[in-house]
Amino acid sequence: MSPSYRILLIALPLLTTGCSDLFYVEAETEEICKTQRNISFPASIPIPGTVSQTINFPVGDISATIPTGSTQAQLRVRLFELTATSSNVDLNGIDHASVALRLPNQSTPTKLLEYKRAANQTSTQKISATGSGVLDLNDLIRQDNLELTFEASGTLPTKDWTGDLRICSGLWMRTNILDLIF
Image (cartoon, rainbow, N blue to C red):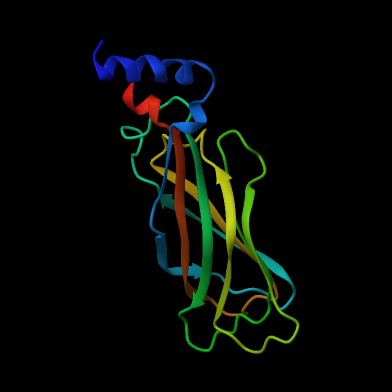
């Protein structure tokens, strides 16, 4: 009996006894950032209110490279920033902001990151939040784009203004290597 057949006969019981966790591969993308420039926000009356903006976040067509077996996938949102690009606009009145993802057939979006204004914050033209908002992508892995919604509330600027919205995230995947081979 040749050595390769012996190795196969020894490995066959391992493959059939639930040791599939030994045979996996993990991959993570570099951070992908999407910036939507010069978003127009309407003037607000000088009482607390809310504005929102929805953008498409490109995931790309990864379906051809991902096996359908035991693949796990996560979108890890790490940063969002809103920078006022209009002159003399102060975002200090924004008390709360969030980034959420609306899943198909979901009435309430899933919040990924949140911003809360610090009590001692002074005038600012930029708000940002960092973290690791994690979303299971197994149901969405075949999508080209994901719909992300940015929402801000508080005392908003009292004149029309524009801003740049930047969202950065990465993709993490784990799959059984046997699904890649067979």
